[in-house]
Picture 1: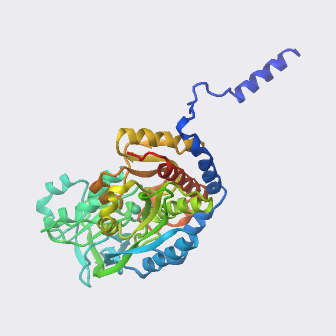
Picture 2: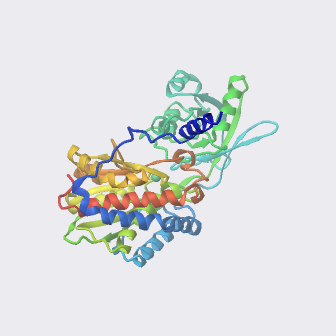
Picture 3: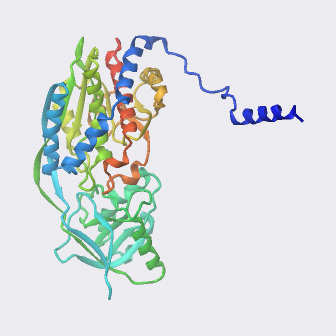
Length: 460
Ligand SMILES: [Zn+2]
């Protein structure tokens, strides 16, 4: 049957190599972008052919460690960034002083008391008060919502309350960390615990700031790893009376000196019109803050380095800002607004990268529909690295005060990755970041920023 053999072979080949999908999206070239294609291609090529951004991020974390506000680590890292920006050839490199809160963690522990004490895995919440030196002891009360807490209001006094709420989304779950301490404190709880706000990891607690409500008692508060929260839940469900001792040395010292770091490429024709990009340089005091938010700082800074290296000086000024104190105060973003009030009306766009520098998918944008259409066009230049989607909301904690004050178009880098798995944990280290991903993130930011700063009409 010699004739069947070629037919079978043909079928086999056809099955293995299906023709390309006919309805693959067509990305028609946008005519008005023609003058920017060459620069965009060079920025992409330069970014993707080097691991400079990853190496710089690795150096930052390896050399200075974490960068909590008030720490000598942060201030040393700020001095380094200034010198490095100058070495890159950026212009108008300087610091803008900011007074920041100085919270320190100290030692901390949580034990199940009994004949054989059992240590649990915790991280105190940022800005929490500490306990007396001997710790706080109390009987455990586990609840799964604010409603359950209110229903148990007669049994809260003197207890250590645990909010055992599995992670859904950050916005949904973080309120138990932020507001739980005052909700429990108002009912007389001795201390508050929260199941770590993040997807289940490997017994990984996540720190993060709490927000005490004015006029309510301030009680010490800590995050417990998801596994430990589940264990305490099982013990309560079994009817076991669990006594706990929480010890925390956390306290505030007097406000400390810190600064936002600024570097620029001055505009060729309209230097007073400014496109601002950046991230927050401070981090929590666990891990090295490589994802939150060292990566955002380095990737935005890299965008300027790439322009400088390729001799691309856009029409308007491009400014990178590394804000201080996002995590436990937001003072850097507020100080930027106050120190730049007079020129905020000439801020063309502000972009913050604070969602990690994993595989970039595009940007979030908040602004007018006309602005969105422009940005969507520009994003077609990033189709080749799959970073061309424009989502509904752009912004960030540090650009927020300026953006709200002056109605400035706001953007954020959007990525796909395990941000909330490692965020605010000891696991936030540079090894979680792929050098190609931070290179692509830098490239996407560089192209978007360059075109907005270069195009003749202002983004509105
Ligand atoms: Zn952050």
